[in-house]
Image 1 (spheres, helix red, strand yellow):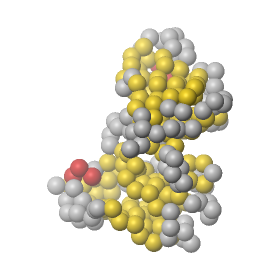
Image 2 (cartoon, helix red, strand yellow):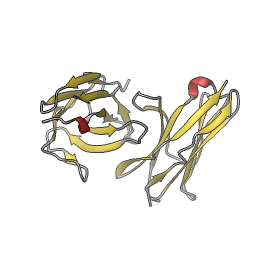
Image 3 (cartoon, chains in turn cyan, orange):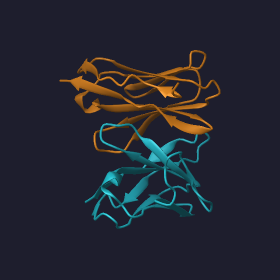
Length: 116
Length: 108
């Protein structure tokens, strides 16, 4: 149980284009999902918290107009990187909050984005 | 002060030894504590959770929690080279906080 998928697993795009990443909870409903970014050899950085049916909450320093998050259903959240630039190249990982009382997080496999 | 602190390592242990990973946290009202394993280039994988003071065992893994000392640890018995990874401690108090991780190297 508690499987989270992400699509695509990797993507290469040209500077100035937009990229959409999907995060799905496959066997449970997730009212809350999280989006992280991780640069090589660095720790996870929380970008935003996504709640189903409401606006995402962004962490300080994360541009909400650049990183658009939509949590349209209890099993799907999407992150769109708009007008991507080479500095946006990173490993993007989503997680979904479990349904247990401890609110553990289950991570998707991640999406490696390269902007050329 | 960071909410969750871990020694970045690397921690090197020989195969078959016990690896001990430590984590301290700042908020006394924390209720839930987690250990994640992250292999290089992969996303984190939940391996243990603990909510009460004391020890919790799952196979070769034992999580230890001491709320009075604000300390949580992970012991890995009979360490294997496949255990070589970065181990992230996470604490849930209103919000989920991750430590920066400890890199473990298990030498054959």
